[in-house]
Length: 170
Image (cartoon, rainbow, N blue to C red):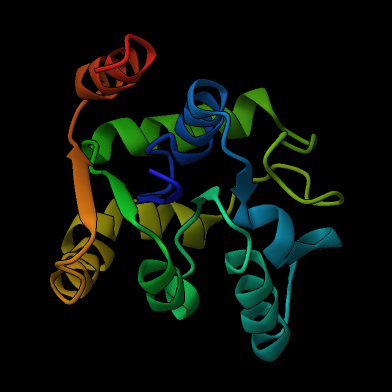
């Protein structure tokens, strides 16, 4: 694993997983939210965003977490490993609500400056509907990249066991 893409629903734990994986492997961690969002949750314009992602992909090795469907194929082409955190909807939804309370009016460590945590009904709706919409599109996309190592982790236990296995050299 030298170029790792981590994907999954909001609240699946992508950023936390990426940080932990980076600690274990020594690979640079790139949180895409830091690059996409501008202060006050202003998105980067599409052309500039694609150029930013292209520059990030040129690095020799990395762990990149985030969904961003508009650049997902670029990232899937460039990676050697995909880790899909396919955790249960209720857990992801709960985590998003919890992080909204815990980080209210503060910037999370994996987020761009000026993007204080907030409750976003559209994002909550996206997380709730993820299994029946975004996940289906993602699984279809992954079929196009059969040359990649795809690791699907479906529970917190599987996540812990995977990271423990790497720590122990397995």
